[in-house]
Image (tube, rainbow, N blue to C red; front, side, top):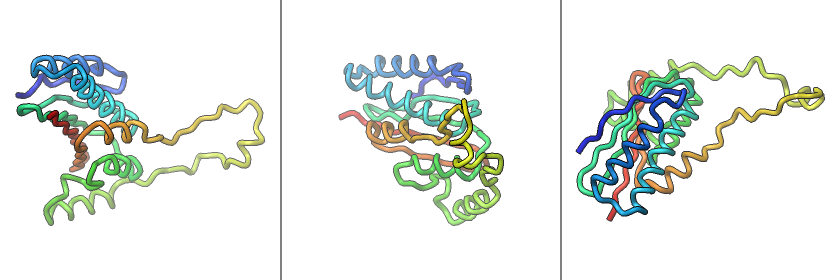
Length: 176
């Protein structure tokens, strides 16, 4: 079975619709309350992680299942730099780009990775100077990886495929 495809953007439009679609799929498949909450948590953390890493995003979300095995899919085409690309791939269970399995896929992946822009940190003020500034706003721009760790813990497998700027994120959860 394949659920409806939900459009999501970075203003949280569609996020609630994706969660509601997950609840509908769980109810349709007669999942227990505990399993339904687990599936919903997988969906929420997957979408939150993608938004946290990629920032600007227009994505499609849907669920496929066969029996009690569920695959939550998200497809988006974000602007990635090397750091965001690494963060996405490090979220995968295998820590590898799923779109780079064949020789040509690995070659394409290496080329795309080489062409990806480096993170520009040239405008940042050194920490020694920031500490001396009065009334400064302390901001931690680093992503803490919370969503990634929760997602890895509650799901069976996380797959990330990046090809031609298109990111395919798949979360697999099977209920026994």
